[in-house]
Amino acid sequence: MIVVVSGPGGVGKGTIVAALIESDPQLWLSRSWTTRERRPSEPADSYVFVDTAAFEKRIADGGFIEWTEFLGNYYGSPTPEPHSGHDTVFEIEVDGAQQVKQAHPDAMLLFILPPSRAEQERRLRGRGDPGDKVMARLKKAEVEEPIGRQLADHVVVNDQLDETVAEMLEIITAARGRTVK
Image (tube, rainbow, N blue to C red; front, top):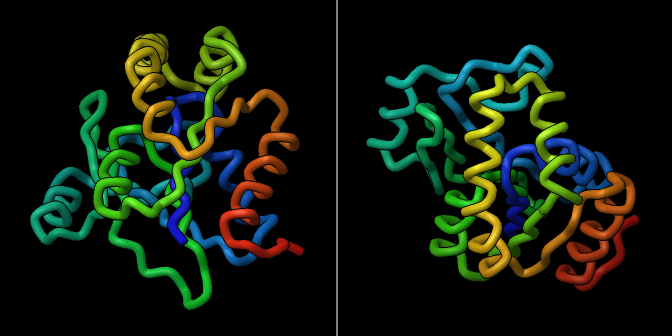
């Protein structure tokens, strides 16, 4: 099964996905690539950080299931190679979610929303995004939200992390038709 966790910047996708992966050993995370600089507060394994030439070579080689350019940087997910018996999780923006759903219509899209724009802005600033990037991400969120809602199999508001993760695990478990232990 392919599980796509998507939503605008600052909704908590990375934190949610880390908790999902930790809670469910059958989930395998497809690590995205990016050409942007690593944020000061960001773990080194949040992305595969590469230069533009390496990213563009991977595009030319057909090595991404999805990719996009945003705020002057590339972001993309390599064609997945999960371990046997694992479900693949993509943590990606709406552009990428559209591409994955086009290639894999049976992929399940969980679209994450913030409890409010003010909270989304607080989260973006809290992770160290510069002011101009915060404003650009908030503006893009206004465009992404209706697209994501339309594309989504499930819409989840990330207000309380533990409740959000529990809800998403229930959705994934129901899609599998078994109980996560």
